[in-house]
Length: 349
Image (cartoon, one colour):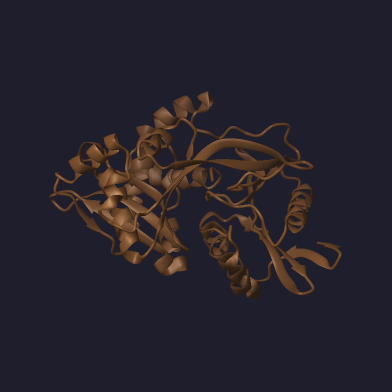
């Protein structure tokens, strides 16, 4: 696509996935969401076309940039790195190579005639050219202590009391892989929030693609009925609880609190040392919930380059125009919400 000083930016070929992943594994900023497995998951579950770019210098791989094209008459046309993921953006051996990858992404966006291109960088990057930074989300993270007894004391005092309360409710946990059961809990949770749920194929596809790097945790009440569940990723030194939720009963049982605390202990037993609680919209309910744990807040400075659009679409559930839609969605039967939701949620990543 673009060559300069022996540097070439081109699209990834099917036989280069292992090479791509090796680069991500060894790059200090390489995240679980940069792995090539997302290419297959997002394409097979949501049908979005991928445009994975790699940079080569004298036949050596020196940078990668995963991109997906989302196209909807209702939600617009975008090129994103990477939808349904917290982190994205380019990984490279140098800032100049990163800029070449980003220029190629913008050029591709212009060629595809998208509304905008979005790069989901975790760390702040100086804006140049067409890129503008926006920060509407934060992630939360903490270290997992070497002493398991110190995990509870590392939590904020009020949240510690909630966890202790949950431990009195005869809850049980099961981390044998049950992606469909976990999805059903997640689907009920997001329906209750008034949000369209993803396709039921997503959790199974993630487990099939990532194997031991993907694990479910189900919390059961005293009658062994599932009340909370979370699908987590394990990568490098991190555990990343990603899709989590619970039934209405989970509030009184505090089973979500029990679940995340138990996940820290499971990760500790596996030898992982870092807990990444994922992103939340600023000042949202999940944002406030995560702050109660006392973890380090990391503002996410995503960057956008407008192509056709004059401004970014506001797809946030906080957008007032979605107020009545959310109330209506909350009243849908669970089965109907699971059938209709995937047609909408595939564009809300």
